[in-house]
Length: 203
Ligand code: SF4
Ligand code: SF4
Image 1 (tube, rainbow, N blue to C red):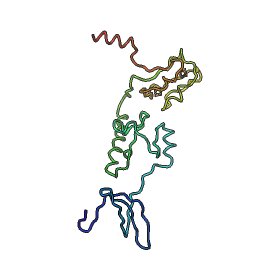
Image 2: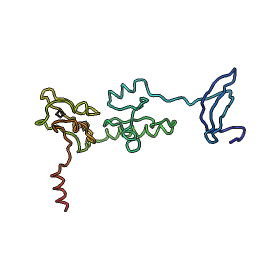
Image 3: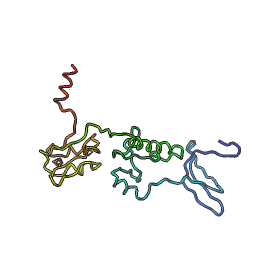
C-alpha cells in the first residue's frame, strides 16, 4: 500500500547489508510472496529479547523450570500464565513472547498481584491432595526424593525415612508415589472405602 509516499510492506527481511553510504535490505513480501529489495538511509531493527545469562542458575535454585532459551516457564500457558510450577513463585514479567511495553505490563502486574494476594491472607490454604509418607513402610531408600520436581520430599537422616514438606507439596501427578517400591509414599485422597461410604450417604 502506498500513501503519502510511505511504502508499507508486510514481509520478512532475510539480509541487511551496507554498500558505501547506503544500506540495502533483502526480504520477501509475505502477502504476495515476491522478493523485495529496499535501499535505505537508515534501518531500525527490532532487537532480540534474550534472558539474563544467569536465568538457568536462578531457575535451578528456585526450582523453576526454564525453556530452551532460558526464559522461565509458566505452569500452564492459558490457565496459569503467571505462576511457576513451584508454589509461591510467580512470573511478574512479560508474556511467553515479547509483546511490547503495553502487552508486557499486564502479566507483570498480574504476577505481582498474585504475590500480594498471598501476603494479604492471614492463613495459607493448602490443597488436601498432598503426599505423605507411611514411616512404618518406608525403608529410607530415597528414591522419592529426586523424583519430586520441586524437592518437597527429603530424607530424615535421624529416623532414616522420607518426609514430605506438607506446606509446600503440590500433589497433582505426584511422581514420588510412583517410584516408591514399598507404597510408603501416598497421596492423601479418599480411598475406595471412603468413596463407597460417600456414595452410600448420597444414595
Ligand atoms: S506430591 Fe510428591 S512429587 Fe509432588 S510435590 Fe509433593 S512430594 Fe513432590
Ligand atoms: S521411595 Fe518410598 S520407601 Fe523409599 S524413601 Fe521414599 S517413601 Fe521411603
